[in-house]
Amino acid sequence: MSKLKRKILVIDDSDTFCASVQDIFEDDNTEVLTAPTGKEGLKFCSDTKIDVVLLDQKLPDTEGISLCPAILRQNEQTKIIFVTAYPSFNNAVEAIKVGAHDYLSKPFEMAELELTVKQAFRTLDLEKTEQIQNYRDSKESEEIELISGQGAFEEIQKMIELAASTDAPVLITGETGTGKNVVARAIHYKSNLPKKLFITTNCAALPENLIEAELFGSEKGAFTGATAAHKGIFELADGGTLVLDEIGSMPIHLQSKLLGVLEEKKIRRVGGESFKPINVRIIAAANNNLEEAIKNKIFRDDLYYRLSVIRIDVPPLRERKQDIPALCEYFIYKMTRDRNIRIAAAELNRLMVYDWPGNVRELKNVIERSLIIQRGHPIKPSQLLKYNRHPAVWTNKEKSCENETLTLETMEKQCIGQALEKFAGNYSQTAKALGISLSTLKRKVKHYNFV
Image (cartoon, rainbow, N blue to C red; front, top):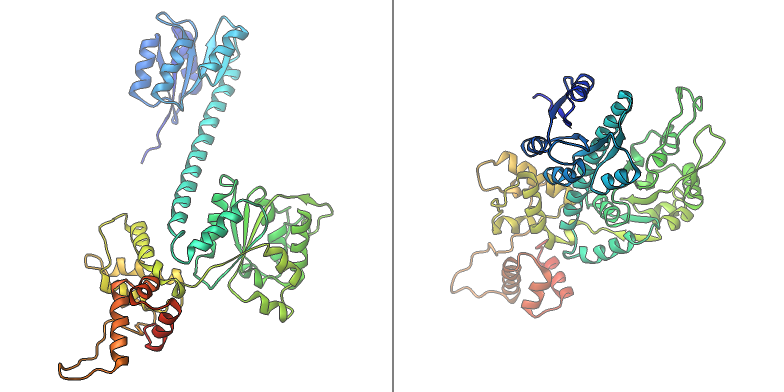
């Protein structure tokens, strides 16, 4: 695929000036178009996407200032460089007011024009980069919203809003695969830092002998192999959010240094003598029991209290099974962009009674595999479950004869099973329909081995 050329349009009735611009800028990556009148120039702008316009003030049929708004209506990102042989402060101000990107007064050196055009292209590149980043941010924000405000996540959503309103450290705990990183992203994108960096680092994945240098940076010659100064993760995340995943695996000797960074908001590189101020939002995540680690003297209690100013506990999927249908629908659409693919109710019931030891990550994996393996057929993710076991089927499989008297226990089991099936595993609705408390229903579900 050939790369699209950048386009410069010169609207000027001087053939000499137009030819000079073509000589300077036209190459394999840039095309230079010329128009002697405002009308012809405007037609170019309506027919093709122009990146930079060199616009003369005095044209045979109009003035450049009056043409600026019409050019920008065709493409608001076009950079107009206003060129005039009759310079004045008022003209310059007026040109900027109507949308010109820059202003040049004739006569000028061609080197000055070349620099001005390069700066215009640079501005265009930066704007495109920002637009791409904003698009990614908005898409990530949309995806984050999909997991919030449902079931157990209602309380978590409130905590996310609270955490986003402050820059205090946050500790997110939960089993592997529950979505701790998604919660961290939600905090970042709902805060006042959405256009800043969001960096995640796994403390358990960093080599123990290099973890300090990776986090805080190093100076040239600080250790064998340090042939140049190196910025650490904290410096790279300056002004944004840094997620320290699996914080419980951080070596005890580095925990005091991290505590100092949190307290003083400055770091010192390995081998360095001076401190560097930083402004980083810290979110820590842990899938192990930090309280137990404190008892075993492998995690500092003062660091724990500093990190858990705001603590968010993400429940495992087995404790919020009412979210499974919505999660399935979301994963299917994200992977296929097809809203017509549905999982049958009976199949959803099988997914609802599974324990999901791998949590949301396992559910996503099962849905993805099912879409690939069972292509062209109604997908049945339950057939791909890791342990291939379904502890309970809500419809009673025991056969009974018409003249057989069922025990009260059997009848109760059937009644609860049918209600669970009717309400797709929603405990609250099932308990309400049966006229029993939620705690009673959970006890019965456990007793009858429905989960």
